[in-house]
Length: 307
Picture 1 (tube, rainbow, N blue to C red):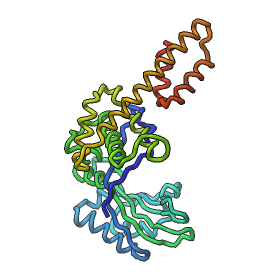
Picture 2 (tube, rainbow, N blue to C red):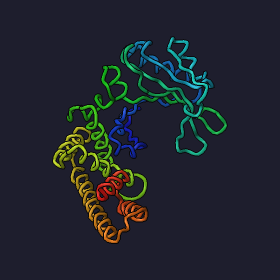
Picture 3 (tube, helix red, strand yellow):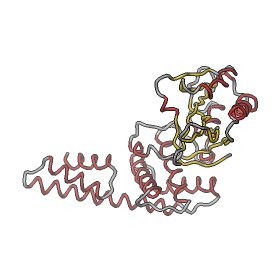
Picture 4 (cartoon, helix red, strand yellow):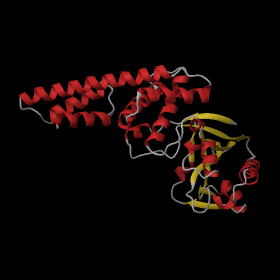
């Protein structure tokens, strides 16, 4: 199976410029889904792909596994793969699928380019089980960009992503920005509008984060439009999301300007009454939240108007 995946669990980190993700929100997942009783076949095919077809040296592959999951890891130990066995965190090796009474337990594959390189997560072999512990399927999955980047000695999966064929990879804040841009364009492309509830809320947070990053990095609206077009054209052969993305960014920045003006007026009025204190700070913070301003920007605005 080959499918595009969108992972958006760390959106609150967009306003932290010290955190550059080691992975991308939008990536290509490849794998196998097999029937119960076929764990040996899944393991054999996984080994055939990684070691025999892709010529990955055995010494560059590492498996992390819970000590209780030897039924999944022993096959690899017998093949000479190093197993890092964890006796403390069995929950780390469990998965939820959003289906009642279905969960998974698995082993993690890590890959490095050579012996001087660091290992990075590659994928998993998982036993999909019902609430009685009976296997209903087995799954092997890996991120294509993660695999390619490690095989070729790249620093990050984004270097092996399709986006880097049209927007040259640049390590640091730009890769953080492009990562968020890809996720936003993908969601816009599928007809979602920013708003409340699930994917609409996720898109709203992405748009706000892009606005925050663009101002910190001094990226122009024209540059965002160009990058948006280039990514959407290479990924979907269309460029219809740019205008909606730009409109969303401008709408947020207009709201931010209103909040700045509100905060300045409130501070001025309270200073005339010699009443600048905790009550005012709470009022400003509450109004910022009501206006949909990012928490990091609320703090910045308050500190700026009080200085």
